[in-house]
Length: 110
Image (cartoon, rainbow, N blue to C red; front, side, top):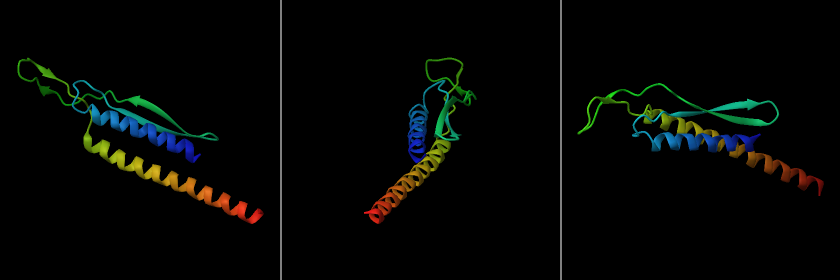
């Protein structure tokens, strides 16, 4: 299970990075990676697009009307980044503990 969770964290980091990279792109809609607990296979990821519009801004020079910037809030993405990193670190610690326990069993048997 920790391996599937690590893979899910990597996917979540990819989504966050994509959102941040496109935060100034006109009409870009952010995505979210939802982690789904699977009973026996660990963690899976479902990626969904958030269709909520960004705040309308006046058009730039040489343009008329208004344009819709991306709906990415950098502060939300940074908070998600911190949470994802902590989740990654926790799952890595579980893997390390599992490895240590297996080594102790091998030491006892031999």
